Amino acid sequence: MSARRTALPAVAVTAVSLVLTLAVVVMWLGSAMPWPVALVVGLGIDGGWLATLAYERRLAAQGDHSTPVTVVGWSFGLVATGVLIAHALTAESDTGAWLAVAWLPVAAKALWLVHGLWERTALTPNALSAITGIQQEARDEAAVARARLRAEATTEETRLTAVTQAGARVARVQAKTAQTLSRAWSTLETAREGEDTGRALTSVTHRVTADVAPRWALPVWGPTEPVSAFTLAPALTDAELDALVDEIRNSETPALSYREMSSRFRAAGHSASEVRLRAAWKRVA
Picture 1 (spheres, rainbow, N blue to C red):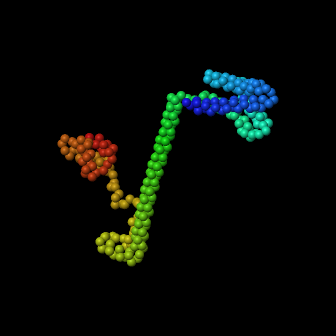
Picture 2: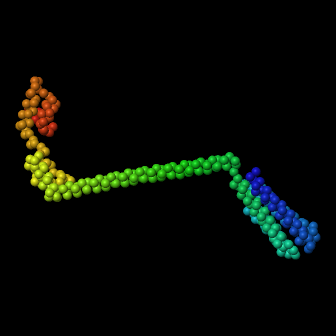
C-alpha cells in the first residue's frame, strides 16, 4: 500500500506525457510529412522512454542500478520535453497552454525517481514498529531525566532557601542579643562611672561585705586570669606520699590491695598522679 502512494502518481503522469507527446508529434510533424511517419516518430520516442523505464524498474527490483540506462531514459524524457516546447513556440495559438504541459515528461521521470528512493528506503511493518518503540523509549527516558533534574533543582532550591532563612534568623537573633548586651553593658558602665552611684554602692556593700573595694568595678568580659583562691595545694613529697600509702595499706588486716588503697587515698581528699601513687605502693610493699 505504501509503494502505491508514489507509484500511482508516476504512472498517471507518465501516461499523460506519452499520450501528449504522441499527439503533439503527430499534429506537428503531420503537416510536413505523412502522418504514419509522424506516428512512428512519436511511438519511437514513447517506446524508447517506456523501454528504458521498464529496464530501470527491473534493475531496481533486483537491487541494482545502471547509470547508462538512467542517462538514456532522461535523454528520452528531455527529447519529449523539447518536442513539446518546440511545438508550443511554433504554435499559432494557445502557446501558453502548450508550454504549461511541456514539463510533464520531466515530471514523470522525477516521480519515478522519487518512487525508486521510496522503495530503497522502505521498511517492513515489524521494523517500523521496532523503530517506533525505540523512539518512544528514548522520549520516555528523556522525559524522566528532565523531570528528575527539575525535581532535584526544586529540592535544592528549597533547601537553599531554608538554609538562607535559618541563617538570616540566626543573624537577627545574634544581632538582637548583641544589641541587648551592648545596652546592658552601657548601663553598667554608666552606673560604674557615676560618682554618686559608686558611693551609694560602696556604702551599701560596706555594711555586708568585709574588705569591700571603695569603688565598684565592672566584671571582666573576656579572657580571665586564674583566681588565687583556687590555686592547687603543693604536691606531696615522696616521703609524705609513702607514709600515707603505708598508713592506708596497713589500716586493715590483711593489708589492702592497691585498688582498695587507691580508692581510699582519693576518697580521703589526697591528690597524686597514678604513676607516683603506684611507685609509692611498690616502695612500701
